[in-house]
Amino acid sequence: MADLLDSVPDFLECQVSKEPENVSAFIKSVMARFDKYMENIRGIGEIPELLPALKQREAYTRNFNRQMSASYKQAMKGSIVEMIATKSVILYGRSSINYVQQGTSGPSRMEIPMQAHSVEMEFPRRHNLDPFGLEYMLRLFRAERLVAR
Image (cartoon, rainbow, N blue to C red):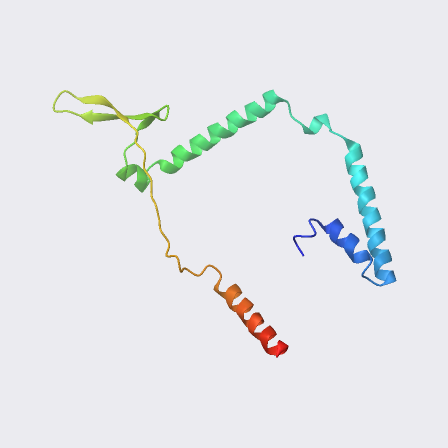
């Protein structure tokens, strides 16, 4: 049924002919009120005051990003992740920069190229995806076979 009817108005249009006269009259009146409501909504058009300018949207995005960055830094202070992991900077998605301590000369900069990493998982072929649906269908077929005899 969900395949045939994509929306509520389509469903209601199909139901008008199937329902008693008083119910179908009520459905028709509700559909007429809904159509009038949608017509009024579309008649308003675009309200420029509700659409901010590009400059304002960009300013809001910058402000939001600053707030998120500050809250992230605040959350990372003293966290266990900061204690056990080291930070590295990614250059254009192709390599990362790390500073390595080499003897007494101090830290030296190293660029490490990134490499591909993938993980694959295999599932057994006889894995039941829908055991209840299959069991139900088999029961229906068996019942139909018994009724046909």
